[in-house]
Length: 244
Ligand SMILES: NC(=O)c1ccc[n+]([C@@H]2O[C@H](COP(=O)([O-])OP(=O)(O)OC[C@H]3O[C@@H](n4cnc5c(N)ncnc54)[C@H](O)[C@@H]3O)[C@@H](O)[C@H]2O)c1
Image 1 (cartoon, rainbow, N blue to C red):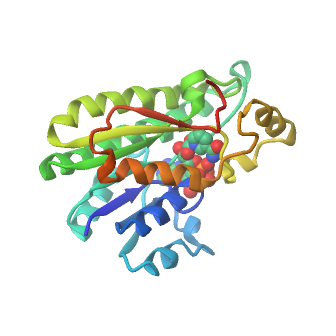
Image 2: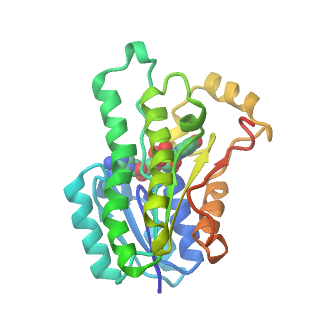
């Protein structure tokens, strides 16, 4: 049975993607930053109830050595890694004039360097398999920019460039690499925004609703499927029409 690894999957979009790929029949390797993220959380039981295997791997995706070790463990446990979803991400928002170096560097490390770490080590396994699907979580902020998010926008814009580079480097080995660029999706990450910020964004969305995690999971399921076998290096916006 094929295996999918989803980073940052204890909650939010990552958990929804893991559940959806389990429904599609993949064994699931979950990942998050700490054990605490899996406490009072039914994700592992929910996935196992679908009749597939599931293990959690605690690893800081921004840490090169930890990622190398974790990817090795997942390969040994499941035999293959067929789908990689680089989902783990954070925000440390603030206007550039007031943003600290630490705020900037942390977001770049977690959102952007993690994609290099994971694509490098999982990519090596996929190259030997001569097949694989990599799906990266970018953001509309990485396409259009967003005030208060110079760190986040930079990391997500870089992910788009990395997606195209990985697609070009690994395409001849039967591996596709695509990105999704969500707009405003209801998760713990966006719960932090003020009502004023939320209302301002709602006004810009053609569909006049915020996205659900299932809106993202469905598109990622498609990109992982056989039907998307000739789609690579692309960025699919899932934003209800925030900018067109
Ligand atoms: N929610 C949105 O509106 C939205 C919009 C655009 C893009 N995205 C992107 O989608 C992805 C998921 O976002 P979400 O809204 O579900 O966020 P979330 O905060 O709910 O979930 C992110 C998960 O990543 C984990 N994580 C953070 N740092 C980590 C690390 N160093 N190592 C391993 N795991 C780590 C967190 O613990 C958490 O479980 C992110 O990359 C985010 O940038 C979200």
